[in-house]
Length: 281
Ligand code: ATR
Image (cartoon, rainbow, N blue to C red):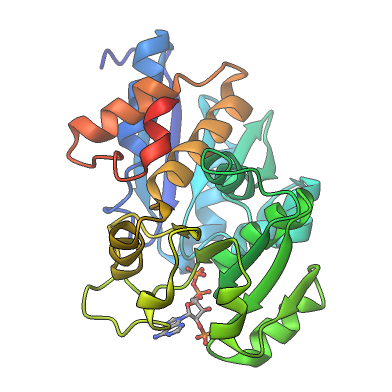
């Protein structure tokens, strides 16, 4: 990295932020394209979010931010403009600083779509979505956009019912029955973050025809089962990469060097090859 006085600054805000992989592949992209820019992790306590963003507006060489947990919803009231997708999803993961104004975008939905479409087209597919939290909303938006038939399951059913009023989804009554009738299963819950998490359903019920997507980066018990059964499967890495690539495009107007970005993650020790088809991009 060759930082200069003229370098433009980008970053990711979260609390905590030390686990973020975005600095790895965003800096790789800047370097590869020869852009005079740097991308840094910024740990911001929720109590300081407002003053932090106000301060950044005055930083003339600050161009773009990714936003992660727990700030994705809170940035909405602090931004000067919201994209149509941000309004619908209710969360932003990308901010662009434009002449002292903050523009809020969401690329999570598009990251999910690009990644999932590596495995299959989604139009008219029957998709079982597990989870009705923040991550689920961007995915429901994406699935609605491409005309998938969505079945939403959540541990606490009332949240799924609430989401079904905002998105075009059916609330699951019987999980195992819906699984049998589904083409694609997407886990948006935090189950599987820890190896010992009890499974959401009996994963041996998966059939080789199922496509299984988990938005968690690690190989979760769900993904391991899908692999053993012979399903097409995908971890959260491709989605991470594609949402970041879309943010890169919004900030720089440049086509993101996807292969370079993916390779940087691999070199950092995060192999993405457990998502079979992603290797072809
Ligand atoms: P995120 O922003 O990552 O989606 P979140 O908004 O806290 O995080 O949502 C977490 C999701 O994981 C929710 O759907 C939650 O279910 P509840 O709404 O019933 O809490 C789900 N989740 C967390 N632990 C779970 C578990 N042990 N079994 C099933 N679902 C779980």
